[in-house]
Length: 331
Ligand code: COA
Image (cartoon, rainbow, N blue to C red; front, side, top):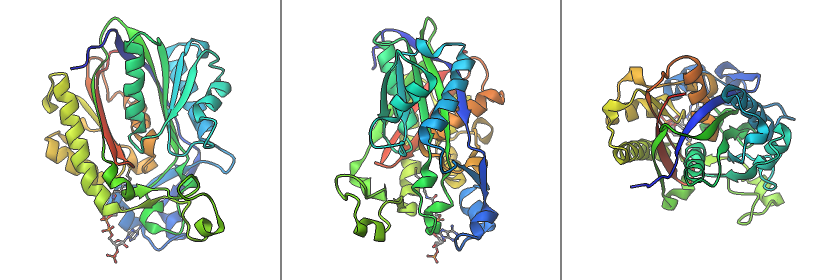
């Protein structure tokens, strides 16, 4: 049982989606696919892509400024920034440092967190511990991706799935309880299921890595699918158990927006009714670490989450990683 010292809650949310849209019809002109196949197998109709000169820190900063405004808090009041991403601007410095400069959050500690598509859930739980322990007071947590720059646009198995975007929240120490519980997991024995193999210490960039297209996302889709269902079920149940709740108590369930078929199976195995789930993957595809962050912001703004609601965010991704967080919404 976690012994937290201070209560922590989300006091603001924001998101930013790049303007450029790539529809399934557009994809038909790039690879051997069809609108019908993509909709039937994934539920995705379109996705948004960053411009060539638009980076993950740009998307992050725009989402962050919206979350700050929503929380009615100044950038200089933020004392921690974590950017969860798998597509940082550069290997170093951390994208969080670039965001700090862009939004002028001059008093913030800054680091990136890489945990596949589960990164935002990991980052929320890390920041929760910092604030709960009294180490920081106000944290800006961002999930952001420009994975379109790392997707192989000749590989129909992956390029139809991903999109770009960013979501952000502000966490603050408060008297009343917001975050109730969380559960994180990992399984490195399945590391080869989703990877971007080259460009770092294992396979430094070379003519060979470029010729073999090793700088792009590689994925074993079917195997990921099966593990996604198991791991989201496991972490949701574990996180709810830790705060003495059950799936019956959940008012809004926000799963990683990877594939509508995965989401429907997860709902079925958990026994969660369809009217409790928030889905926006038809518009954005899989935005990886940004996915549940964007969905949370949209669910709040669309009035799908009301005061006192119990909300669960759950995700899975490269690693394999998985995790869930449970909170009571009382902004
Ligand atoms: N358009 C048309 N056909 C396609 C296609 C596309 N974009 N992508 C794959 N296919 C073909 C395959 O080549 C295969 O053809 P074959 O039977 O002639 O070999 C057929 O469709 C079925 O492929 P399969 O991989 O079995 O499809 P699927 O139903 O498992 O769907 C995914 C593929 C990738 C959509 C699905 O496995 C998935 O979503 N997995 C999880 C991926 C994920 O969430 N990744 C991110 C993790 S964070």
